[in-house]
Each structure stands twice: as C-alpha cells, then as structure tokens.
Length: 356
Image (cartoon, rainbow, N blue to C red):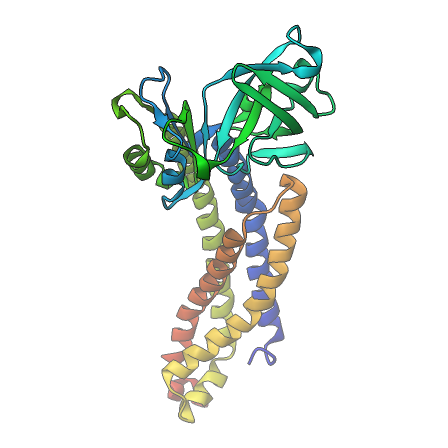
C-alpha cells in the first residue's frame, strides 16, 4: 500500500520527520538547558544532609558513618573529625598552619585526587588551595600538629558540597577500626535523588550514633529544594506547551493529508470491502501505511534534531527524553490516521463502485 502511494508516504515521512526535528531542536534545547540549570542548583547542595555537633557536647560517634551508608538512597557519606591545625615539618613551627581533619568513610566522588595517590589509612591529602599555604607545592610533605603527625601523599580538588575542604588537609581514618571514643563534628550525606531527601532526613537522624542526640544539628537544603522544584516546574511547563503545539500541528497536517489520500483511493477501498475485507482491516491498512511513512521520518528527524541541539546548546537531551519524543511522534502519527481510516472503512462500497 505504501509502495503504491509514494507521494502520500513521502509526505507523511516529511511531516513526521519535521515534527520530530522541530521538537528536539526546540523542546530538546529547553530540556538540555533545564538539565544544566538543575545540575548547577544541585551542586549548591540540594541533595546534601549535614549532621553536625557544633559544640562537641553531643559526641557524634564515628560508627554513624557505617550506619548511614547502609540506608537506601545514599550515594556517599563521610564523617569529619574536629579541626586540628597542622604545619609543614620541613618549615618547623614557624611555618604557616592549615586546618586538618580526619575523614571517615570512602573518599567520595566529589573529592578527586589530582596529584599523587589515594591515601592509605593514616596518610593524608592536601587541598589544592592549601598547597601554597602549607609550603608543599609538590604535594609531598610531613605535617604535624597537636596530637597529629602524618605524611601527605597527594593533593585533592573537592567540589560542592565539600568544597570547603580544599583549604585543609584530610587524613584517611580506618572506619572499621573506629572506636566509640572517636567523635566527629560532622557527618555529610549525599543523597541519590532529590525526592528522597525528606525521608532520608528522618532516617539519618534515627541511625546516627551520639551520646546526646539532642545536641545534634541536622542541616537540610529545604530552601534549595523548593527553588529547584520551582525552576523545574516552570521550565517543564513551558516545554510542555511548545511540545503540545508542535504535536497538535503535526497531527492536524497528517490527518488532512490522509483524508485527501483516502478520498482519492475510495474506489480501491470500496473494492476491498466488496471483496470481503472487514472495516477493521481497512483501518489497519491505513495505519500501516502511515506507520511505514512515519518510521523513516522519525529516524531522520531525530538525527537532525539532535545535531541542531548539539550545535545550539552544546549538549543533547537525555536518552529518555529523546526516546519519549520519538514514541510520542509515532503515536500522534497513528492517531492522525484513525479518522481517515474510519472514513475509508465506513463508506458504502456499493455507492462507491456504482457506475453512473
């Protein structure tokens, strides 16, 4: 059927391909921009929960890190000890001091080793902003302070929400050997999904181990989460409106084109009905013709749209978004074919085939 009507099939291909390309070039660009904006907001700490013991009276214990890490939805968690100032051994007591902290838990993805090696328990890394202050430009030095003595084996660059560590030295602590007397000042939790933050706030508060939990402070990113949701809803609303407009226009144009095609081939459909074809078979025939024209259009339009988005926005929308657009465009094309298919199926074959 599609081979016998190359013009209608080609027109359907062009319409569906154009609709798909326009959606990806416009709504896709908005989706890519939305993802970048939300990522920027997320870097400010929308998925971060911080349990702190500012006074030291709560005695927040190191085994809390293990308890929190076992919760579903936690990407990573670290514990930080109280600050101890340290200086470079080679420069002596006159050397400038930087804060140091023992860090419990696996080094998170937000803390990247840029020079040297990952520290073994008891070894240290220095933040990129503390290198010059400490006088350890090669990121190799010994540091000492009150009750602290360790070797620096590399440097790190920390991203938010732990960017403040770039001005300090972090000492890897063996969590499995942490005793109850080892107290923390902070437990920093990164959550996998923003929507999981409210429930994990309650769960984290329940599992952290402290001698006096009433002295703990749990800092939550409620304002940032509200801002993120507001921005996401606003951007998504504008994108949906544009998406529906493009799909609506495409549906209308395809329907009009197919109505004309059905009118031109009414005798062919009439003969099929007279020879015993059911109404549902006629509708499926029109749908098959439309699908045959839509599929190459979807492939072509998707490729063109992604290229345009990449050139204009510098990135492409997610695979889920792209796949959703393709499926929606195909559904719209098939929906547009239903009225013409019913028109062809319910015409009286006797009247169509009657010789004047």
